[in-house]
Image 1 (cartoon, rainbow, N blue to C red):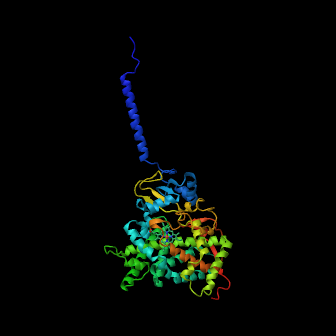
Image 2 (cartoon, rainbow, N blue to C red; image 1 turned 90 degrees about the vertical axis):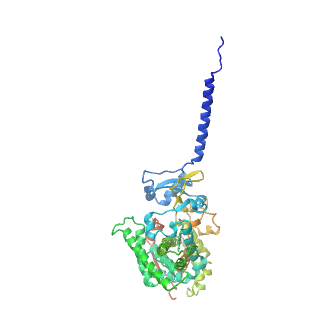
Image 3 (cartoon, rainbow, N blue to C red; image 1 turned 180 degrees about the horizontal axis):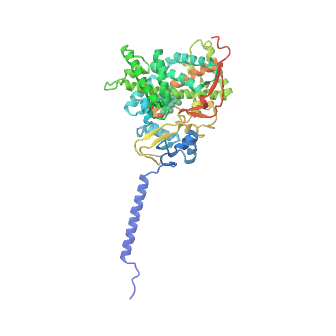
Length: 478
Ligand code: HEM
């Protein structure tokens, strides 16, 4: 009898089932792969502490740029107790800050929110944020800030006068902080009684000292003192507001805009909401502008030829104004091309706001990578400003590079999108005015070490840039 060589039917059935299972499984597998994009490359460091120690141990700028070199423009890490995705490219910054703002909310530590006040606009998004922002943008627009020029000029003259009268070196950053605070007060309140201004200044300084201290609310700690001073600030602001309301002063300054605000339903802002926003704006304005000014003094000191060129640009305006006897005009502040480029290049080099924080409100996929819900997202402005693809020889201080406009989204000293800086025109105006008086009327030398960078939290030259200032010969006869 001949044997049947064909395999039994059961084998066919098994083979068929195996193929079917393989097919189903592999389909499922690819599907799963497609639905679950991977996390960006990078290291999450040690359990709990993540990479926080490395961040503090190294200069944060070196930490971020080393990471970008190793992993590329998007990478993950774990710092200050939070898993984070860092974004070092212009498109990614635009994705988070401009085109997908609804997916990412602003995020700050609770202790900072408590200190400034929870109603400050930058803690919010949506309708409340855009309503307050509109007021701030309007009252700090070029059209509105023109009228501050005489006031800012008087503050600049008084500042440099005090530096030249000081027999010993001064901390440039601390002096610039005094100046930028006064300009902030001017922009918010217009003219303010001396006594009220001094009270505000005294308490604001205590809040400022406690803001970056460890948040332990025990009597005697800087944080506790700051919270007490913050309460006092609210009281002073309430007094100023009720005086304004009594006198029905509908001034056109920022406080006036906040007091006059009514939404579509006719609701006004509470005193607490106004106070939180005023303190928030003072915070946003002071250290940033003071840090920029301090870096400009350092860069001009380091580049004597450039300083000479800036001096001759400014001297022409000074002489046209009868050696400063006539005030600067808006048109003159708009005709300082070299000084303006020095400001832009200083903002690029120093990248005062090196990065910002947002939090993903849902799982987001960017460029094939998953940004999980709840993770922090940090667009790294400094990495963009120091990328040789966008800025040739980025470590060189070269204001003339700004003769050609930077590529879109590569120059973001004031951020971009829904939360970009509404104070940028005021900041540039006060810097131009201070530089005008500084280079025309004073000479200076930097003393002591100045090559390291300190963080306050914004970058500042070592020891705040200690410098000695004296009058430029022939200027005092005015
Ligand atoms: C050189 C000086 C300054 C720099 C480098 C700077 C930088 C920035 C940056 C990068 C942002 C965006 C932050 C983010 O997206 O998270 C911002 C926001 C802000 N800045 Fe400035 N700033 C400066 C001066 C000022 C001044 C003078 C004022 C006000 C008088 C001001 C008021 C604000 C406010 C209120 C916000 C929050 C805006 C919002 O959330 O809608 N800043 N600033």
